[in-house]
Length: 232
Image (cartoon, rainbow, N blue to C red; front, side, top):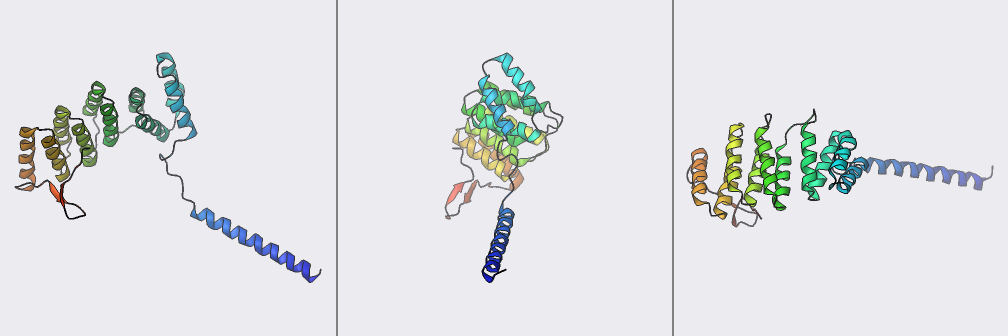
């Protein structure tokens, strides 16, 4: 074999080796897909199918029975969240009811906050209250302070004072003691809605827990003083 042929062969081997190493390195840098971040094909098809038949009760019942009920748990949750994102309120409510009947279902307060929000921004306050009543009926609620605070903030943003106070006492009945953030959310929100007497009551409770006076202002990154919540 001539020297030129040998050199060509060596070059091809080196190039192939470099390509192999490069491909391996690229594969190492690929980040795995995060479950729940993207809708699967099955979830996308289910959302589309539900939207197509949402005005036909018989067809809607069939799609829930043949498509939605056969999805994996993560896909069911993904479909529900997508329906909420698209403001498909009634479809989201039906999907949530079906999910509640699944053996793996566990109540998540942040999900309740999302449902309350979608009904509030679409001014479907009867359904919003129905969702809250479902929350009241949940037996195995974990004492999730972040979740309860999110619900309180959401209810206040729509000016639903009665349910806000019910939620405050519900969280305490479930063994979830309000923290500083809870009191800041309530005091700031109630004052912004001109609910002075309720705000005073909550402030008194905060002062019993954290001392008097209870300060709801906090320093931001610029050194200025601001309330710890922005409802809008």
